[in-house]
Length: 325
Image (tube, rainbow, N blue to C red; front, top):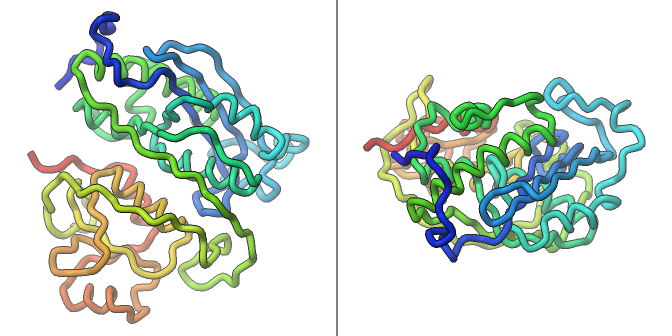
């Protein structure tokens, strides 16, 4: 385990391959689906060593219901008169330009940002992202779970307003700095991933079906990709009432309200293996329609593969247990 509370690496020890700047980002949204919108955004710009240069915050008119007000606190009245995303896109881009985007569960923040820029017919100027969940795993931090509040408490950072974009970004920036320095001291490779901007967007209406939120749109843009192999051994079948474990093989079947790529990216970054087909080695099948009669649901019944719906899977992704040592 790394000692993450010691002094920063000296100039001579700082890895030359590390990025020259970071944009620590948090966005609050109307929900998790591909057509949900950003309602507020914050960016803390950091230099190469994690020192704060400046910060920025804005409300955003989502042009729809604000969603879970009980979480982010942003009512219709609060958002009344806020700028549209297209109005703040240029300033937001200036904060991200030539920096690595840093976020807690970065695939989610990046996906929401990429979609907003696609709607505005623009391209965000960021090419790499870094997830602080992945970094904490690389560092072997002794965390009981991977919630932001847990990471903050580990480094003695006090949260003042949870789920407020500016305060969440501040907390993450303060927790990222010692994480970055611990990585530099030990020569840890930063878990940088490519940010792929969307190149097209469609908000055409769709008819809701069982197991699908109304915000789902068929035929969504989906980049081709080759995922890296899962580094963890398969621990076997998922057991109800227990957490998912790194290395589990997860298959998906049917429509999902959250974009499939987002679900798969989140699962991959949590250490799960995405299975394109279902076999006796598959740990879990995620489907919103277990009685659909697809080949995957039929095989799941034949093999005794556990089946859960998308909502339950999303909850389990919040706290995936580490692989067996």
